[in-house]
Image 1 (cartoon, rainbow, N blue to C red):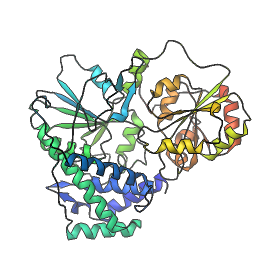
Image 2: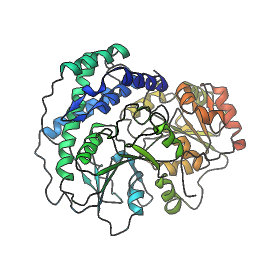
Image 3: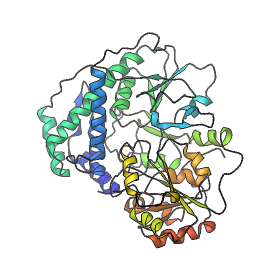
Image 4: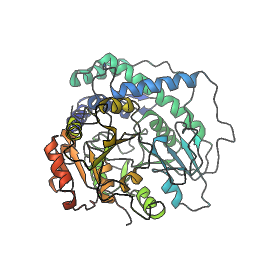
Length: 463
């Protein structure tokens, strides 16, 4: 199902069923249900064992079982008090610097801008790999080991039945999915409440990717304690991203599971978020820009370019299968490479950092392609360093297309998803688009020198 169609269905369901039946201890847990529906509709059937969300669930289940087998509690040394701000992130946002240290592209630029005397602590919700030396030290926030025996009310089962009927989703699977994610949310809420309640001076929490049980639990705990939460934009927040846009039933007090504010890259993201409820009092966006870009350009960017003039270096940024985008590497690119009609073109295939099964896919997909025609990037290189050695960029729908433009790298979009998501930019000629054929690709590469890359206002930067 296309992302735009999934978005419209979720908004429709939100307005047809009684979402207020989803409660736990006074918290309205509709955001959990909405996230489940979003993943289901854009990633495929609940019964599909290769479904992306199924993979996420299996990983979460393993983590839960592991945590449940050990005793864990925060010592006084681990819970630093007197913070005015806390930053909570995910290891997937770490980017390797030339020094060998790793920099968090979401929260570290904000930390860098603070007064040196400001009391802060940075947490990750999973442990970064041991071999990664971080630019800013951090602690690991883990979910509580409490075991929850959850049952659904008659009213909740009735509404889940309605949702299942409206969306043609197996209602028993939907019930199980809801209880699983609700249990994870509760464990994170308990853990966060224990930690945050010791922070008497804490005013703000900065986090990212709020729409998973870990961050929802942290937001709920912070809400009870009167601590403001800010979700810092990590990727495209378009008009069809259902966890940011299309919320039609936000009350004055809002949802405790959602952040109070959304730090956005630019005005378009703010507009998308507010389109469904312009007068909302909570969960409001503001323009913060993307500080990582400015940090990279001022402190990291190489003084010389590594691009070889005679070689066209094409970067393909991939995403796990979602919506109508079923493959990471489309056949028209394989056909183009197999034809060898252009001998001076080299491809770099970059996996999404969260794509845990993509490596095997790429090795299988490319097994018949000469290895001198491509390189594999498993998502662990600094993306901006890769842009610095790229002359062209291809993607299905990744927001990397905006970042590529800032580094003067033109983008070719492909497939039905990008045609909807980037409709305005394609119409205005900001990005090129193809339905997926080698002729379009050949023509685009041949005319790269004629592409005048200009930055849109999607990302606000200082330079």
